[in-house]
Image (cartoon, rainbow, N blue to C red; front, side, top):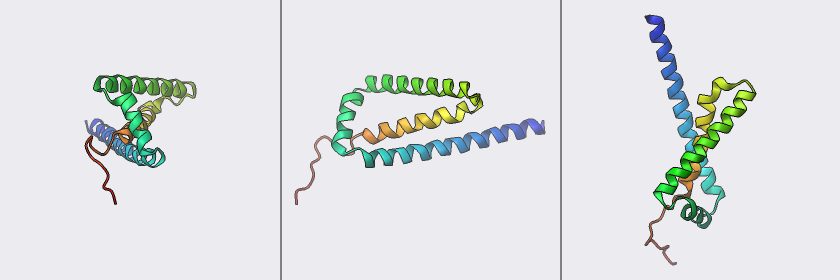
Length: 115
């Protein structure tokens, strides 16, 4: 009974560590993509791919599916398949950081103050 409890605690600790690492990856990729890609380019990407919520959901699902599939295939071929639950979410977190960085930060009616 104690061994089962310790095993569950270890799994929960590993899950929390992985979740924290994914949050850090999302934030880092957000700031990196925001620094690399200019504002107008990010806005054009958002308007082209993510302006419709239905299109957004479908594209994110397909991109996550493709990333996870390619990762699983690569890890299976290299015999590191046991790390799929760590590597695939980390790569999807980078995608999420990119998507978040493309969302416009100003509203539709906002204008920059002229000096």
